[in-house]
Every structure is written in structure tokens, then in C-alpha cells.
Amino acid sequence: MGYRNTAGVALLLVTAGCSGRGGDGAPPRANDPIPVERVESFLAVPVDADLGNLAAVLERRLPRQLWQIDRPGQACVPSRRIDIGIATIKTPTVRCRIRGEVTRGPLQLAGSGEEIILAMPLNAVVRAEDIGGVLKRETATATAMARAVIRIDLARDWTPRGTIDIRYDWRDEPHVDFLGQRIEFAEAADRELRPIIARLERELPGEIGRLQVREQIGRAWRSAFTSISLNRENPPVWMRITPQALRYGGYRIAEGRLRLNLGLAATTETFIGDRPTDPPATPLPPLQPLQRGSGRLSFFIPVIADYRQLEPVLLRALQRRSQRPFEVPGLGPVRARFDRVTIYGTTGGRIAVGATFAAQDSEGEQATGTVWFTGTPVNEPGSRRVGISGLEISGTTDMTGGDLLLQLANAPGVDAYIAGALTQNFDRDFAELLVKVRRAIAEKREGPLVIRARIDEVATGKLKAAGQGLYLPVRLTGTAEVSVAPSG
Image 1: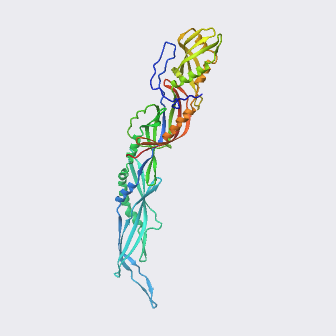
Image 2: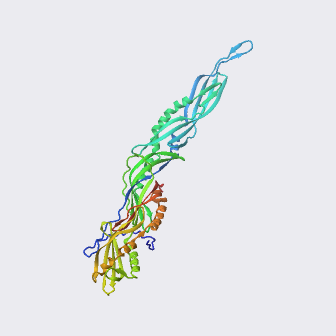
Image 3: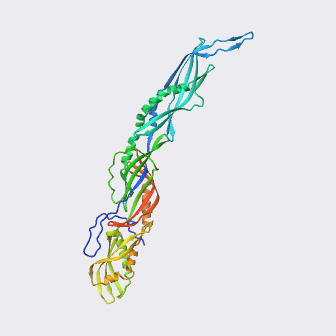
């Protein structure tokens, strides 16, 4: 038998503490709060950097003219034998000076996986000058492509550093066929580019620092100390995130962006009511390696029944039952009128149920007062159906008219009827709340922090009775990614 109110579900938290009552037969009131579950989550935290800025910096750093070619006294026209019919003569070797330069074109930054590829087009212009004093100049050109492979690493303090490895993607080694000879400059390319690459490698950490990778990591860390709204009202539900560690699992390059793979180890706590205060942010901890997959989110939704919402449910059930007499052994039929029901949490994880009523037996004897029962709320593993076990009389208050009330309360089936009236099924109520939570965390922004999560598993825990309400812990697990929205 379910219960509902105009808000749709009795999932409200009794925020005010209750003082105990003693000496009058009523069980003592518990004042313990709903326990806040703390569980560990491991959230994926991608941090992106635009590599376009790095390309612009390297473009300024690399000179346009990479090296010059100057080879005097080259055999531009080699000697050869010519048969003139009556004799064979040998022509002289024609000497010349070969001059030229190798320049680069615009840099192209791309990459995939963990390699940033800096493509460097090479253009060679070669001239032969003073060719045996006969020809003034001949010119030839050639093109090729060199590639610098950049890899980034992070130090323990999250400072980025990088290495560069020059590679050549020659289909045909760069050369020119000139005046009958082949002039190659692949070897020269390696020799001439090596000091340029060495200089870039020295300057690379500073240039990578301009990507503000460490600053973005620090901003993501500080922003994660926050609370995320899981449900706005009826009831308000909040998940507070407290980061514990940040781990690094490398990076990947895609579509001109550098994406760092970070895993945030954090505890998550669920609160009902007002937004909890954010935990104080701690300094960015040293880098630790990522040793397992990130992106697992775990948190609890406390499905809570306010005891005050249960009282009218039980009172209506008892009033319906009182429309016909109760059969009390030794007394016969007894009529009763139920006026009030009081329910609260008592000690030992039990609930107290006080039924205030008046009774009259067949001989006209009357009695009024409150009979108190205590019982333990229970549920089957994985079930959201709540029942009451071990319901028994614990005392009376405001009694007048002898033992008639106790005899009626002890009549066969009365305790079972009360326990049955208190049996509730949270399935529909929980389903409604779960829809709200799924919608809230699909993409939720709190300040600069954006969380995107999907719930994959739902597990119901063991029902507990606390001073502030009946508490059914439901654990949700799924995948989650946390990112920091651009400022402004």
C-alpha cells in the first residue's frame, strides 16, 4: 500500500531536532540525523589546450632560411669523350660555383595519439654560376618535407615539458639533377637542422607553458570542491564533491587540440535540504600516475520518509478498521475510536508508534489513552518495499479506565494490522526522483564546473530508522566526466 501527498512523494527531511520524553510510558525520542554516506568516486577530468597557439609561437621561433649552399670549384660539366670520325677527343671538365639556399614554408601543426607533428616544407634553390666562363648562370629547384615530432610530459609539479625528434618523410631524398649531376642535401638537412631543433627543444618547455596547461589543471582542481544539485525540490538533494587526488594518464591529440587525461579521486556525499557549504579547496597535489580507468561516479540518494507523513496514513487505516468491532478474548466485541497517531524514531534503530483512542466493551466499560508500540523497519535486499518487523507494545500514557486499552491492543491481529498499514512501497516514488536525478546530472553546471554523467546501476541498501526519518539508502553508479567551462 503506497502513500502520496500533494508534492508527489513523502521524501522530506525533518530538519529540526527532537528532544526525548521520559517517565510517561512513551519510548524515548531519538535525535540522530540521517547518516551522510561518503563514497569514493573517480571522475574523468579532461583538460584541453588549443595547439594553434603553439604553432604560432614555433612559426616565430624558426627562421625562414634554414641554411645556405656554397660549393666552389664543382665539376658542373664533366669531361667526356667525343668521336669525331678520324679521332676521339676528350672535352675538358667545366668548373663552376654552386650556390643556393634552403628555406622553409609555413609550419603545419597536426597530430594524433600522443604525437604532435610539426610539418616543415623545405624548398631548395640551387644556382650554378660562372660555368667555365661560358654560361653565366643556371638554376634548379627542389622541394621536400621534414617533420618534427613533439612529445609532451608533465613533471611532478604539473609543469609541462617537451622533446622534439626530427624525422624526414622522403619519398625521394631531396636533391636536384643539375647539368648532368645529382646534388643531394638530405644529409645537409640533418646536419643543419640539428642545432635548430636543439634550440627549439631548450625553448619548448617555456613555449608549452604558454598553453597554460598547469593553470587549467589547477583551475579544474579548485573548481571541483563544490556541490552539485541532484534535485531542486521535493526534496532538495545535493551531492558534495571533495577531491582527494589528481592522477595523470597521458594525453591525446585530436582536431588541433591537446586533451590531457586526468582522473580525479574524490569523495561524494549526499545531503537533503539546503545546499551544503563547499569543502575548502586544498593546494594542487603532486602528480600521480593514473593506474586505472577514470570516469566512475558513485553516490547515494537517501529516500527519506518523514514520520509525520506516515501518521495520517496509519490513522486513516485504523479509523476504517474501527467501523466494525474488535474481537477481544474474554471480553467479546469492543468498539474503538481512534483520534490521533504519533510516529517517531526511537533508540536501537526502531520506530515508536503511539495510537491515542477510546474503547468501550459490550458491558459499557470505557477507557481512553495512548498505547505505544515499537518495531523495526525492514526491507528485502534490493527492494524498496518497506515493512515493520517485531511490532510490540512498549507502554501506555494518559490512561483512564483500566486495562481495556491494553487488552484491545493485544487482541489477535491488531499488531499485524498496524504493521500492514505502515508497509510502504517506494518504487513509484523512487522512480520519480530517479528521473529528476538523471536529468540533473546529464549536464549540470555549478559555477565553472560542468559535470556530465550517466547512471548505469541502481542498488538499494538496508532501511534504517533515524531520529529524522526513515532512511532508504540507494546507491547509484555510472560514468562521469567533469570539465571546467571557459571563463566569461
